[in-house]
Length: 147
Image 1 (tube, one colour):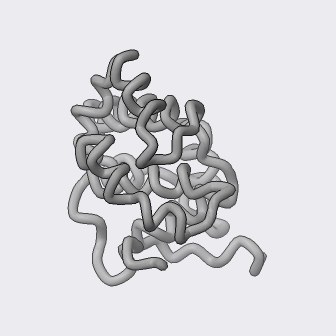
Image 2 (cartoon, helix red, strand yellow):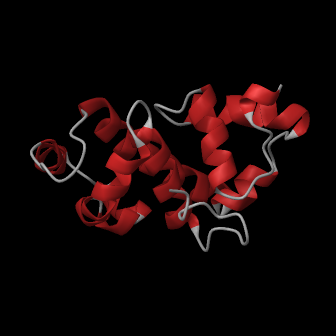
Image 3 (cartoon, helix red, strand yellow):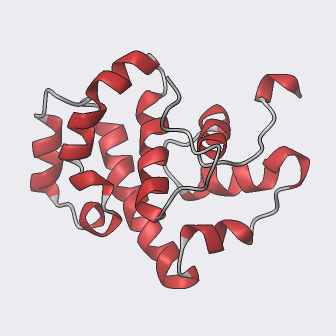
C-alpha cells in the first residue's frame, strides 16, 4: 500500500515529488487499492509525471485525459494536476528545485505553516492530503490525529 512513500531516502527528483503530490490528490476520497491498480495508467497518461511536459498540456490533452478510462476522470483533479505542474515550473525557476523551495518554509509545530503554504500554492491539496504528501516525501510528520 505504501511502497511509493519515500521514507528511507528522499525522492530522487522533482518529477518524483510531483508524482507523489498528484497521487495524494487523486487518492483523496478513493481507496488506496483503486489508485494503486490504475497508477501505471496514470504514469502513462501524464507522461511519467514529467513536470515540463505536464505543464505544457493543452485543452486537447485535458480532453484526452477526461476520456481515458484507465485513470480517474475527475476534471477538477486533472485540472489541478496541470496547474500544479505549472507551479512546479515556477518554483524551479525561482529556487532551482522543489527541495530548495521547501527548505525555505517554516516546519515548526508539525509543519503547520509549510502545510498551509503548500495548500495555498497547489490546487486540491487540503489539510489531510498535505500531511500525507509531506509524509510521502520523507518528512517527519506526526499523524494529524495525534495532535
